[in-house]
Length: 263
Ligand SMILES: [Mg+2]
Ligand SMILES: [Zn+2]
Image 1 (cartoon, protein in one colour):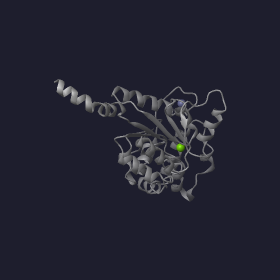
Image 2 (cartoon, protein in one colour):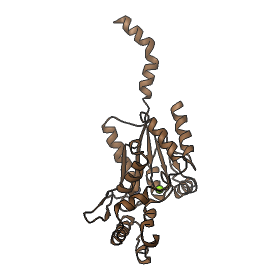
Image 3 (spheres, helix red, strand yellow):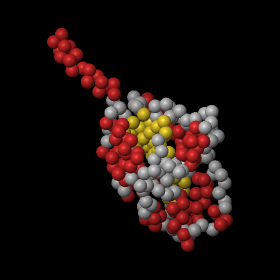
Image 4 (cartoon, protein in one colour):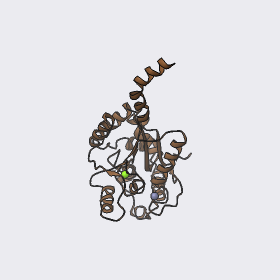
């Protein structure tokens, strides 16, 4: 017994250190203009007659009600005989953002260190098509986005992801609420993260970024809305608490992740 304890005490420092460090990082990805280099909801318009929407439809968008607007776009496509397979063929030609294919490959090879989720205002059908076509669906543990499905008459329909009370976010989705609920659920299962890394570009990525803590990292895409909003806040009385690392290619993100796991 004592002999065993002795042996254990000799080996225990590195072992215990290993346990204490049991590092797991959470990567939170936006989708449009982050994973793909386009807006999926705009890209689908390529399926419309003459690749454009009638003015009346385009002008029907009401701020904060994007999901309803997309619902009308899908009705228009359905009315014009655009079928599921044509939509799928069109959507899977969207280019990935520079460096993203390598980054997602790298994450996929290091899944024991990285949990990875998508929080997006696109929809389940588009994201499924795109991830599966590129064989990236296993990289992501969960995808949080507006639920969509084809009706029995072949029309694509989309619904709000959830209801929330956040005044800063569009009616259908508060990404902060999604992130909070995900972290709570993980904690219940005994999973907590060494660091959260949030990768996005848009205005609706600011709400979750403002929820991040000192030890976390926001990675806004260079030249896009999120970067501008974060730097505006930096000059205000309530800057973000987390660190900020701007990226222009996903290679930048990969370099950061490599430096993290080398430590
Ligand atoms: Mg985006
Ligand atoms: Zn919000």
